[in-house]
Image (cartoon, rainbow, N blue to C red; front, side, top):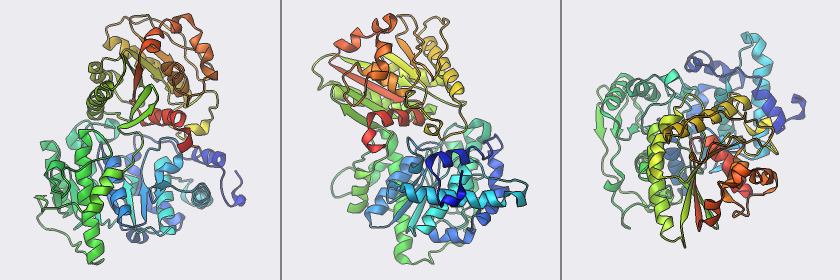
Amino acid sequence: MDLDKGGFTEQDAFQALNTLPPPTSKLQQERDHNMENYMERVGLSVEELDRLNIIHVTGTKGKGSTCAFTEQILRSHGFRTGFFSSPHLVDIRERIRINGQPVDKELFYKHFSQVYQCLDETKDNYDGLMPRYFSFFTLLAFRVFLEEKVDLAIIEVGLGGHYDSTNVIRRPWVCGVSSLGIDHIAILGDTVEKIAWHKGGIFKPGVPAFTVKQPGDAMAVLEDRAKEKQCPLWVCPDLEDYQTDGGPLRLSLQGKHQHPNASLALQLSHTWLQRRRLDRSFPTSPVEDTGVLQVSFLKPSPIMVKGLAETVWAGRTHILKHGEVTYFLDGAHTMRSMQACANWFKETSAQHETNASGPVARVLLFNTTGERDSKAMLRLLLPCHFDFAAFCTNIPDVGTFRPTDLWNVNHTVENMNTRCLETERNWRLCNNVEDRNGTQLTANNLTLLVPDQKANSLVFPCALSALQWISQGRDSVLTDGANSALKGKPNVKAKAPLLHDAAEIHVLITGSLRLVGGALKNLDPASYK
């Protein structure tokens, strides 16, 4: 890396990230001890963050969608928005957006190099202390938003809340909590009550906070946290309770599980607009006795209605139709979100089938990562009655694979291969198909692990090879050269007739946002150059 260039290349940035400390189970300790230190070293102060007029959002599921709805609503009002989210799908710049678009490459790498250089040059004064992956991007987002003079910044919590790097924010304008559930148990705890404690950690004295309806025990914890923090806490109404002049609200993001996210977004954007229009002295004094409050009547404005209908949030209840092949993409990766995904796919696929000219083949493309229970999630998908199941790593294309495609030091290629094979075995167990030994899958070749005929499942080394086989040449967007060898294998060809004979193919891609990102890079290349 040459820091004198004035900006990093993509490869420089990737190498820099690999010098940062790896994430550990003690990640939650970082913010209390070090985040203020990092900010000072890159020339930022906690007081400066007050100028960003922040909306701070946490939750287990739906926090990204909530942020996306909120950002679209406020951008539709003419405000210059900043939006920090994670993870990214394809391009790491997706984590930091200005007016809904990933930060320009030149601007991104300029700020990246400056932040990294400030930290690197001062680390010897702090016993070599450097931020972890997510903390680095939090610092980078703050710097970009301040330099670009956004009117507001929507900040999505990375993990938990109380100990999250984003919780260095002192005075947000409003906070939100989306649906709570079990995830990241090694860090946040194994009960929804423990998780709720972490999420409620973003509450601030006197700062309005809103939550969607939560399970009783979780709501009780949030209420206790609100009292502890002297923060007024409101519960959002059901989306159906909002009255508009044009009938029921229409959401661009499909699925009933998006309804509470949209309701939360309406409350967050409305509260932010109230403060903006009144003045900057909107009361933020501590509240002695809060409890959980019911929101007052809110009639969404035409701009709010338009914002909900025009929100784009790729990879979540996302449909791409390529001729006879329809892809249903959803980055569900928890039990609750997978159940919502299964319900959405069953309903939406059935609607599409009514217009098909003949039989429709249903195919699952799945992968999952980390500590998540793939067997339990796969069981939730059994009622979808898939004709085939395909499993692959999150690598977009082994033919053009570079380490920078991953942008994540948590997972090696070998780990992803092992996980992929384990997941396919779990699928066969769910379908009562006996286990069997198979060949080792590697990312450097096109080896397939092919089970017996009853299992109707295949394992592929990357998203592209899986998608090419599933589409059987019917999708002109997918190049076919790298996959010709796969189609020639007798045991693979034996599985193809049903796909060939079907009038249409419906493909559900789920289990991991990174898998969805790898698929989108191949299915929508124009959007991810």
